[in-house]
Length: 551
Image (tube, rainbow, N blue to C red; front, side):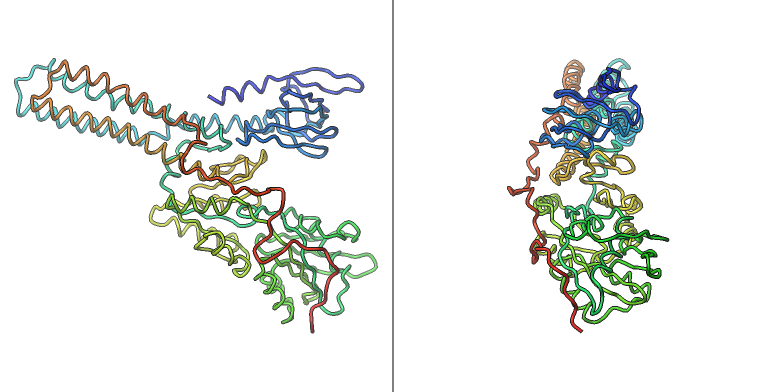
């Protein structure tokens, strides 16, 4: 099992830098803040940040992606991954139980421990079927063939139940094989029972930002109301974004003047998911301003007046697929900033695979419908819920689950936990080596093909469990029927039953077939992943000076 391989990573050695000397210690003795020297070919002993040097790191143990990741100064390394061709100095940030490796091992162990509980109902169903057949056979022999000796009767009944009993015994082993295969592909399931839920799932919700798109916003345009100073507006916006971790806040850093514009302290800062940011900014030499930055729906909550020209221009930008932020203070909207997001290149193949699997994809987002309408046509999304606040997303998901239907939700690190928790199966795509707890399924890698592979493999796993259980019941019933009619002798029954007992023991081994060989496995289009792909109807911006809205 892969969990045994993971545990061996706990015992690696670390080169701790102390002054001018290097001391070798066990990885378990590393303390937060230690400086560690990692040489080529060594296992990274703990989570840390590169402070000197450049290297390539193999994280395939966790992500399933064989392509090494380039790591330079300021980037994070994950404990348990393999340093390939460069020597680096690392500042330890997480050690022991708080490190990624330890959390990963604990989650894998819990998933393996859940195997016996996950097959409880399959076992009950199998044993009930065997007992039912045995009871009917017993009743038949007692009523119609009372002269049958107890020894002959036992030979006729007990051996034929053997394949079904073996099937019930090997079910946990079957799930352990399935878990081992998914972990090797960089797919982490919190519980083994998720295989059955995934196999039954018919509705799958997707968030947009950071899920269907890369969540990497690039500044496009800035438009101001007449008389508004560009530096004043940018200063207000940049001061608020400094307190936010949303991708749009990161996108503001792509503005060419981001470093030059002064930023001020913000009091009473508030972040409203799906709407925007607000807070009080005190610019030296000026009075305080309560500034609101977000969508038009958010500004209307604060009775901000938005001019007709600004509304029309914002709608035009949204129709082009750009994300629009409006900034206002003192009761008036002062200007708008727009950003271009980039699509994941494997969205279309993934949606095509979901169609083949008869799973209904639904996008649920807080964005305006005009901004995302092109997705319906370009990527095959037939249903979109637009302008949804987090509580509205939760209600939509709960409605899809009515009547016992299974609904999943795919999000990213940006999504609120309650929204993911509202679904039967909350999934995070592209979690990297950061967030692996709190969700049902985590994909540290960023390929949507992992999602479709998991769905296909879950159905294969569920079919395998049903096959060996029902095969045992059917075999028991058929042999009992023919023996009752006198077509089979006891010696033949014993021999055939012993041979049939190998079927449930061997058949689950089909799950060890590499997941990459699955026939419906999605593949990404051949395209340069380093080159950003703008939303349809847009082009990557050439940064220009802000323009004023017409009166």
